[in-house]
Length: 215
Image (cartoon, rainbow, N blue to C red; front, side, top):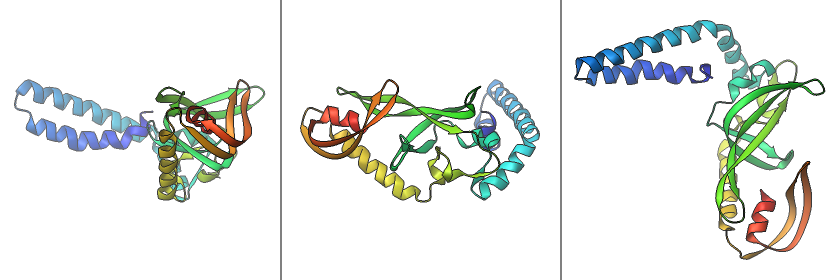
């Protein structure tokens, strides 16, 4: 986690703290800020040294748009936006805000990464944040980032286009609030206890039910 914020820490130490020390008028305040800067420098030196090989490997991999399973954690920085197909359907993309990536394992399945985060949800009465989870199974050797089941949106081949598409869909989603009837024809998804069922819809539904079917 610390490594993911290394460059921010470096910038904070070099610029923000430097400016604060210069602007500090009280001797006690200036001393405290200098101590903070000293601690930050120690942390930066530690991270630069301890993650030297990791940084070197990542530089080469990311330059070619690839990643290895053991370095997958480096892609998912908290609060970044991740891209994934809706319930494995590539024709229905979705994005969510990442909270963290956990490496998990089991005897039957082996190893995988669970990418957990939040997305906008509607329960028929009000909007709120729902929990979301996407898995990336173990793989051998370097793999194209865009071929993963879940990856940061910034690596998508058309970030602007995908962002515009999702924002437009989100606006339609928000506009469905209330009990107005809407006509729908197409595929929808219904959450079940043991997974998600695909349902063909052709008729009129209340907006609250439709919103839940769509998301």
